[in-house]
Structures are given as structure tokens and as C-alpha cells.
Length: 396
Image (cartoon, rainbow, N blue to C red):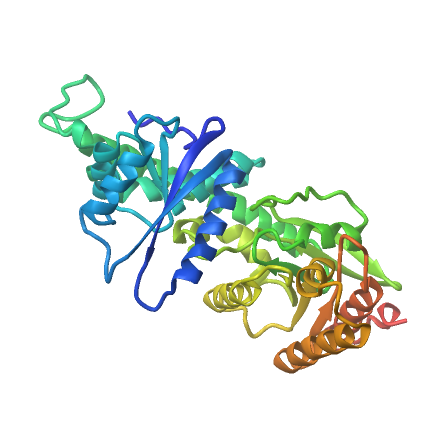
């Protein structure tokens, strides 16, 4: 019988492992490891050391080379370090081989993200979605991770004659996946009914990379207390509120944040949550402009929106955390004219790239929120005029 446990039960010390592969640079890898360290912190672990290696392709047995694995083993031996986190997805056999060599628990980025989701899932829907993703992650890795189970069973009522325990575990996992899919299909039907009952309202959805400030903006626009904190994946469950701006109502939804290398099992199992994005009339793409890799994050979200086939919807790009951007970009010696010129160039660039659909704000400082509200209001009213022209009371 398989017992699932969270990967990280308490704060642990961990080492991170990344590989510079083709079409990638060392600085890019360090950015990815920065994010991996933040993921580890969100899950309750502290990253104390990083190991990197440049290879044309991963080692089929241990992902990194034999020498690098020995280097990691020498570092963690005798220290209070029992967790090794790889930035790339590992096979079950690789995990098994690495753990034998290092005598330390080994997980990959996908497993870490699943652990965070499992900790943060509150509703029955979110818990079922995460559990489905966990079982889908486990299934192809059973043989590599559970070689010790490859023996004849013989227990009464649990397996047939000659069936190995590994085969029994596969059957258990497949049955659980089937059951969870049925449960989520029922929840999805209920959610579709609820969405239909919302009436003829324009629907707006907040999307973006994780930890860019979507929930903070949701709080400011809806005047309600949606959970927000400086950690990855603070929001798993979609929250929808009715917003009224200058007598014009619309529905605003906050959705789960995206991230690079997001396990495809999560995208599949969170289908019903992502339906809020698919059924939205307008997307508010929030970007943390203070992040050093904000353009890469913006690209990850745009790629995910393309995969969801919603990239052709009207999009307003909200560049958030301008206060932190200015603190990171400007030093005390810059003149006011130079600062204004830099900010103007930034606005011109992104207004050009978004066809004028960009707003620059600081949600935490409540800076430029009037422009944000007015821009959203204009877009919502335009859609009402096209879709529901008889609702003239919404326009004035």
C-alpha cells in the first residue's frame, strides 16, 4: 500500500543541483536556482549550497556526472543536510540511484512544487487536484523508486496469484487516478453551473507569474481580504468577486500563479480552476517589474496562455511593484530628469509592445491605482456595448 507524505515535514537544510544544458547560460541557471531556493523556502527548507554542472545531456543513471555526484556526497557527509533538490525533472530510476549514492532524500523541482501545492490546498477541489497530480507524478516512477517491492506478494484480498507488489501499487495508483478524475469532473460540473448562474456580467481574470501581486491587486479592487503573502503559490483556489467601478459591475477572478517548468500534471489536474481563465472576457496580466528576470516571467505566462488557447483575448498588462523597480534601478546620484527619462523610455517601450495596453503601478503603495481602475473600466464598458448593448445603465 502506498502512503503519500509531504516531501518536507519541517525546516530542513538542502543543497540545490542544476545543470547548464544547451541553449542555456550560467547566469540563467543561477536565476533558475534562485527561484528553486525560493520554492524550497516556501516549502520550509533552507538552501545552504548550490552545485552546477555543464553537460550536453543529463546522465541517464544519475542525471549529473559521477564526479559531481561525488562532490555533492563529500559536501553533505557529516553535515546536518539530508535533502537534495534537483532543478530538473528526474526519473524514478535516477532518484533511486542518486539516493543510494548520497544516502540523502532526493527530489526534483516538480516534486517540490507538488509538495507546496499539497500544503496550501484548502478546499476539497484543490486537495483533489493536487492529489491527482501527485499520483500522476508517482505512476511512471514506481519501478525506479520502488525496486524493493518487486517480489511476490501473496496477501489475501490485495493481489492475485503471482502478482508482484509493484504491479499492485500500479493498480492502486491507476484506480486512485480514475476515482479522482471522476470526483473532479463532478466538481467541474458544479462550477460550470455556478458560472452560468452569474448572469450577463463581463468576466475579468487576474493572471501572471506566481508572487507578482495578483492577490494584493484583487484586494484593492474588490475591497475584500484575499490571502496574500511574499511566498510562491499563496493562491491555489480561484476567488471571484463582483466589482463595481463607477456604477459598472463585472466579475473579477484571482487565479493560481504560473511558473517555469510547471509540472504538466498540475496544469491537467487544475483544469477546472484554469477554466476561469478560459471563460474570462478580459485578462489582467500582472508582472513583477522589479524582478531581474521579469521579461522571462512574462514570456512564461504568455506561453502558458497560448497553451490554454486564450492568448487572443483582450489583455491589459499591469506592471506592478514600480516602487521596488525604482529602488533597484535608481541610485542616489541620478538626477530627477534622468529618472523621468528612464521611466518614460520604459513606458514607451511596453506601450509599444502591448499596443497601448500597459499600466504601471505599485499596489503596495497604492500608486497609480486610479489609472488602473479607469483603464479596466474603459475595457469592461467597451465589451458591454458590444455584447450587451441594451445594458445602457452600466455605461453611465
